[in-house]
Amino acid sequence: MSEALSRIAATIAAQGPVTVAQFMAMALIEQRSGYYATRNPLGGAGDFITAPLVSQMFGELIGLWCAQCWEDQKRPARPLLVELGPGDGTLMRDALRALKLAPEFRSQIEVVLVETSPVLREAQARALADTGVAVQPAESVDAVPHDRPLFLVANEFFDALPIHQYVKTPRGWCERMVRLDSEGGLAFAVAPVALPPGRVPANRDGAPDGGVYEASPAGEAIVEEIAHRIAADGGAALLIDYGYATPGFGETLQAVAAHKFCDVLAAPGSADLSAHVDFAALGEAAGRGGARACGPVEQGAFLTALGIVQRAQKLRDDEALMRLTAPEQMGALFKALAIVPKTAPAPAGFA
Image (cartoon, rainbow, N blue to C red):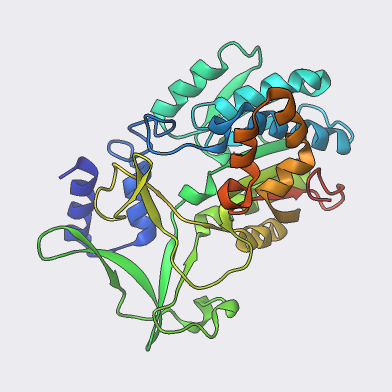
C-alpha cells in the first residue's frame, strides 16, 4: 500500500468517508506523499504531456497575447506576468523568448510562478535561470503582489483542482463520498442525506436518477479573486484547459499514469487525477469578481487567430500544429477563457 493510500485510509478509518474533493486534495497535494509534491509528472518519462511540451509555438503565442493585452490597456506600469501551475517552466520560458519581440513589455514585467510542488519549483528554476527576467515563486494567488496590473496564464491548472461530485437519487442530490471497503481498499459511496434545495443549482433540474454533476468551489474562488484584482488594477487572465462550455450530467473525474487511464481509487499519490473544467461556472465567477469573461473558445480557433498556422510554416512543424489545433486532437476539447476589465476591449482570439 502506497504512503498516500495509507494516509487516506487512516483518515477515513478515523473520521468516516471523505468527499471526492477531500480525496483529491490528499492524493494530489499532501506535502509528504501527494502526487504533485513528490514528482515531475510531465513528459515522455512521466504520466502526461501538456501543450507547451508539444511545441514552443504554444508558449510563444501566449506570451505575445499577454503583451498585446498590455498594449490594449495603454501599457499600465509595473505589470506582473503570473503563471498558475507552471509545470516544468517550459511555457514561461517560451513566452519570455517570444517577448523579445515586445521589449517594452518584457523590460517591465516581474514574473511570478504560483507553484506548491518543491520538485516542480526546482525544474522551473532550471528552465528560467538564463532568461534575464526576475522570477519569484508564490504558493497561492493570494501571495502574488497586490496593487499591480495582473497578466495571468493558467494552462491545465483548473482541471487538477478538487471537485465535488453529486449524484441524483430518489431522495434528491447526494454528495459522492470515498469510503473503505471490506478489504481496506477505497470505494465510492453516496452520502445518506440529500443536499438542501438551496444548494442545488437551478440548471440541474430534470436530471435522471444516477445523473452526476460536478462543482469546483476552489476553482471558482480562485477565478473570482483573479477577476477582482483585474477589475481593480487592470490586466488580463487566460485560462486554457479541457472542459465544457455548457453544464450537463456526467462524471469526468479520471486518473492517468504512464500516459494511460487507470482506476481513480486504485493508486492515489501515484496517478494524476483531473476533471473536465466547467467554463460556464468560471465565467460566472469572473462576473462576480467584477470583471468581464470572454469565451470560452476552442483552443484550435484561439491559436489559429493568434497566428499559429503561420508560425508552424516557419518552423515546418505540421505535426505539432495538428496536435494543438485539430478538433479530433486538442483543438476542440481544450478551450480558452479570457478575463479582462469591463472597460477593456475584447482580447486577441476572442473578438
